[in-house]
Amino acid sequence: MDIILKKILYIIIVLSIFNPLNSFCQEKKIIEIIEAGRFTKDEENFPKANILSKGNNLRVRLFHDGATITSDKTFFYSKKNKFNASGSVLLKQGDTLELKSEYLNYDGNEGQAKAWGKVVLKQPDMTLKTDTLYLDRILNIAYYNSNGIIEDEENVLKSKKGRYFINEKKYSFKTGVKINNPKYDIDSENLDYNLISKKALFFGPTLITGNDYEIHTEKGNFDLKSSIGNFQKNPKIFYNNKIIEGDSIFYDESINYASATKRVVITDTINNSIIKGEYGEIYKDKDSAIITKRALAINIIENDSLYIHADTLVGTGPTDQRILRGYYDVKILKSDIRGISDSIYFDESKGKIELHKKPLSKKQKQILSLKSKLKLNPVVWFNDSQMSGNEINLLTDLKTRKLDSLLIFGNSFVIEQDSIDKNNYNQIEGMDLNGDFVNGDLNNLQVLKNIKVIYYLYNDDGELIGIDKTICSELKIKLESNEIKNITFYTSPEGKVHPEDKLDPNLKLLEGFVWRISERPETLDDLFK
Image (cartoon, rainbow, N blue to C red):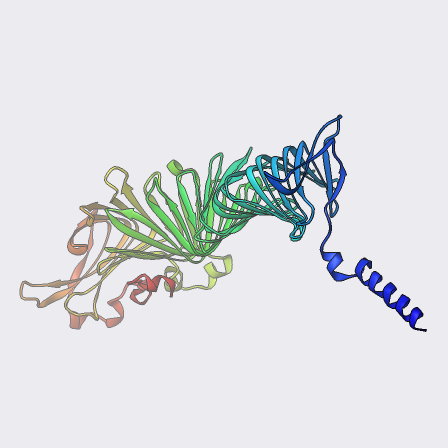
């Protein structure tokens, strides 16, 4: 019985040592020698090393954990499970990975290798070249710290530092990253690139340079195959002397389209103008942009900012033929001008601003009173003077960039609150109105056709003389500091001065009188109310 037990114990011990399921043996895979031309030892210079070298048309071939390593000469340390190879070294792992170098140090216990000297790592869809490469076969990661070049079907990628995740087929680049593509170049400081999806992810300052555009960002992604990108941190797009900014920008080069979200700013560097909003779309081929949600345009006139707000702003045309259109709830604000309208047309190349009313339907034309209709007309204010009409034009001198003239077409109406009695209003109604500016101030006005006037007259002591009510076919108004100072009537004027107490209060206002001071914007915040 004792002999049988001893035999069983002996078998168990042997099995415990050589059983392939033993965890220790499973982790520690031994490097195997497949073949070599020559075998020598040099204990004095290379103690405990088996020196393998090529000879008899045979090169050194070793095998470890699914990989074959071929070289001209190898110092193999069997007890340490390591070797140092040199001379056209080739590490081949299946049919998917090849590593070529002049030198290779390999640790079989750690599954790690260091290759240097004309290093080339190849897979079917990419090639990596560098001077020194580290390979971790357990984690399946390769990395370099001294300049690497990666080439795939369309791109050449360069960086000072890089890490390649073999299983995921993904690169992580750091420092001096450059991607060269036939359609664009990319410069970044921190970039991940997926060989399968062809997407690049940015985690630091990045510049994408196309044939006629630049994209700056500090975070985002870009599909190198389709040229579609999303950029989230400080993104900017430069093209045709324009700058597009926003909290987030989407870009599709194939259709030359971009959209921006939150704190959107489009700057025209040539015309010195800006469009802002919370959402924007840019069509590069049409050279157009649409801005909505708190849309605001800023133009420089007379070294002063002209602010234009609308529900929707549309900029179209090249820089030298730029046109800005605004739709719905238009408001304009300048230090000396205020205005409102349903829509606006601004031809920057001609320095012409048109304010339009919303077209009336047939039913509205039939049922609305004159007052209700005129209340829908665009209005501009110059200091205390309110001017309205079916359409208002403001023209700017392109050389001086100063306001040059004012034109009002149809149902022209000028109202000015009396400076002495705020309950009274000077009023002029006519068909059309022309005005000119001197040094930024309205200087002369001319009103034409079907003119009606109500004007309060005072003596030098500020006492009311009476109320002048006149009709004529033409009149001219002299202004100072945008206030009416003198009125001259032409073409058979008819009228007289009425004592205030003799004039019916109902006749103190012209039929279409609408005082719209409550709608007048005074601050930037008012533009959005």
